[in-house]
Image (tube, rainbow over all chains, first blue to last red; front, side, top):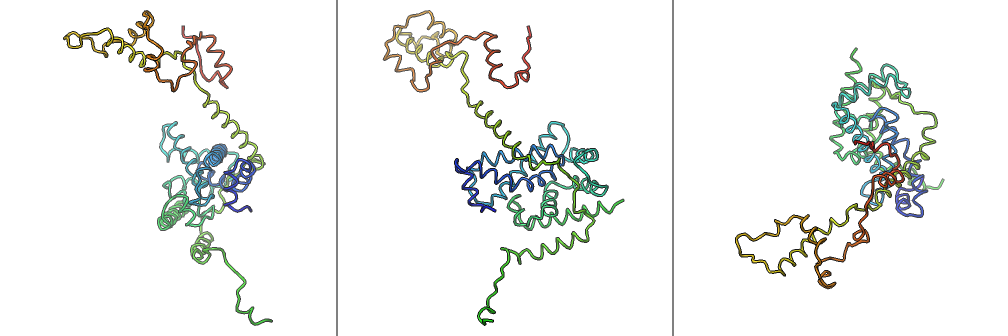
Length: 180
Length: 178
C-alpha cells in the first residue's frame, strides 16, 4: 500500500494527480461507503454522498496541510457531507431529524438493498432514536472498529467524551433490543 | 545458538498496541455477549464498487464543466449603466463651469438631478470636452469593448443564446406570459 505522504504529494501534483486519485478512491471507497450508508441508510443517497465526498477531496486536496491523517480528513468530509445531506432532506420535507430517520427505517422494509432480519431492523429503529453524536460513535466503534483516538480526530471530540457516548449508546441499544 | 541473540527481541507491535489493548479487549467481550447484531443487513447492487470509479470520473468531469461554464463572462445588456456615475461627475464639472450661484436659497443640489436627466443631457448636448478632460474623469481600468457597443437583443436572440448554452432549457420554465 502506498504511503500516505507520497499519495498526498502525488495528489497535489498535476502530472500524477489522476493516477493518485484512482488509488485514493480504490483504497477508501468501501470504508467510506459503509460509513456514509450507516448514516443515510439508503443506497442511492449513500452513493450520492460518497461521490460528493470524493469530489470535495479532489477539489480541496491543495488545502490539506497534513495536520491530521488523510484518512481522518476524508472521514470528516464524508461525515459532514452525510449530515448536511440529512439536514437538507429534513428542511425540504419540513420534518424533524428524528421523524425523518424513523421514516427512513420504515422504508428499509421495502428496500431491495436491505436484507436484515427482524432484529437488524429493530436495531436500526433503536439507532434512529439515539442523539447524533452517540449514533456516530456507536457506528464508528462497533461496526467500523475505529480507535477512539481516530474517532476523536474525525469528530473533534475528546476521547473521554467519546467513551462515555459509546457506553451510553450501547446501554440504550441493549435495553431497546431486549424489550419485547 | 549464539548467546547474544537471546537478549534481542525480534518482534514488535503496532504503535499504541498496548495503550489500546484494554479498550479492544472490552469491545470484543461486549460484542460476544451483546444482543446487538454484528451485521447491519445493508447490501449494495452487484458490481457497485467495481463501477464506482468510472461513475465518479464522469461526475467529476461534468462538475468541472459546470464550474468552467460559470466562469464564462456575463455580458451586460445595457453597458452604459455603469457610466452613470462617471456621467454624474462630468455633469458636476459642467454645472460648475456654467457658474451656478450655489448660495442662492433655491439652488439645485446635485442629488436633485435624476440619472435619467443626466443621461438625457449627454444625449442632447455637445459637451465640447477635450480628450484630456474626459480622461481625467473616466478611469481606464476595467473598460471593455462592450462598454462602447450597445448590444440590443431581441427575444429571439436571447432564446437562441440560452438554447445553445444552457444544458436543459426546459428547466428554465420559460413561458409566454403575454
